[in-house]
Length: 396
Image 1 (cartoon, rainbow, N blue to C red):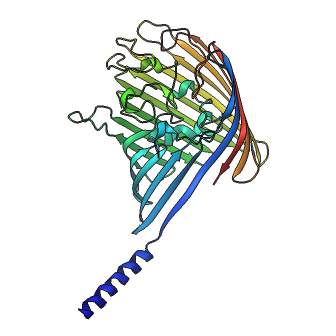
Image 2 (image 1 turned 135 degrees about the vertical axis):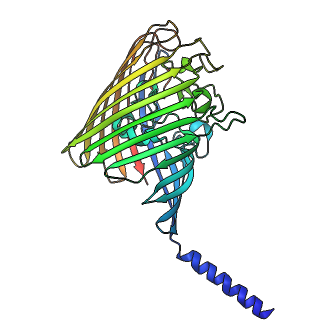
């Protein structure tokens, strides 16, 4: 018995030593942002209040060396509202990211869970609204972030593969399971993105197809048919909130950027289609008002960033979005201008000031006269709106 105890202890020590040799790490990271927001028209009234240009968050990023160049990885990221301390993304504990997977410099990365789309990985850096123009607030996106470049809708129940960089090219492929018994394709998302980087030149293109988007990706929690259809942060958007009954949604995006010394020029185009309108029953703030057809949004953006000094960057963007209309309703047009300035106090702390102007015309998704409707905000009572935010961001 004494020998057995000694042997067991030796084995335990051996296992412990082996585990100790495996290289592993867990990193705590995050962003804390507070700004003062002004919006001149929220349902007819001016809004003053505390908000955030960059989404406040904290996360745990981990990896463990499994040998042979293979690593186990995970990322758990929580979003929260700084002013109230409330959980973001509809109250989900890790609503921004929650995935685990395997990564290899030779074979690429395979992850499973709630995560950003491959489309976002390939094209978001070319959009001012996902880069410097108050990405957390959402005001700087193309009309209501209709193409999801600013990730108003994250992808859950998803498996994603990202290839290693080969001659500057990176490929991402994602499939999101609808988790509906007896119907494998219901509420599913198919997504692919291709990116290229070579010195000052960056390019990206993507394709995403969603079955029954109201149930699959709209709102924050997915598969829950939330009343926040067509929204960012569960606030109804008249720009496309009326298309909740779409049987499917297709998004094609392409863009690029080029750096010329201190100046970076960016361009982005997207085509978003809400197909088979009225095919499914959907509630939401506007209900079902269509009995067939497809509503198509074409959106284009030009933007520029100028590093006036190592600390100070100035930026501007112009965005035009056209909704073709559907079901016999007229089309709608949206013009937007974003202006911004960022000053780096230190590598982790920055000051910012952003301003936005949006003008709308025609007939929106609800069948009413189009009004200005910044993403992440309640709609204006008129065809135009102005907003601005100044604040501080700290990263850790």
